[in-house]
Image (tube, rainbow, N blue to C red; front, side, top):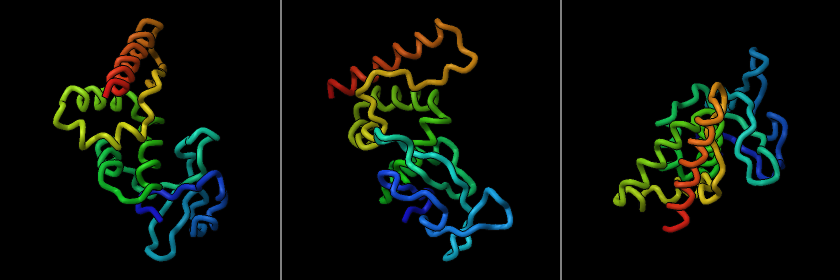
Length: 154
């Protein structure tokens, strides 16, 4: 089991009990009995058949904390759970991080798994389009295409 995320595999789990969680006094928070940690439900990583059911431990890390989880956790649930949150909530930061990694040839090797988890070879706009005009959205898409090209040439 993960330390920060609990995730189904091919949608094989649905209910809190399936993840070893029990209800708490707060209707949208669950407890892990073994350590009394608090968890909240949310859809997680999409492997191609829809977002997996899952839970995250409270408090949820910020962007740098999520990157750290992907880079150092041995748990698949943690790596893909952190990636799901980054894709949902920190796409603009991910874009910057990708350019930072790809512009530093020394860090490429240590970040190869990080880049692979996000499936960045596919040139799609992962950035938020909220409050952006067409020009800004097109600009973001071009940046994601550049990242896909760089990764495709690795």
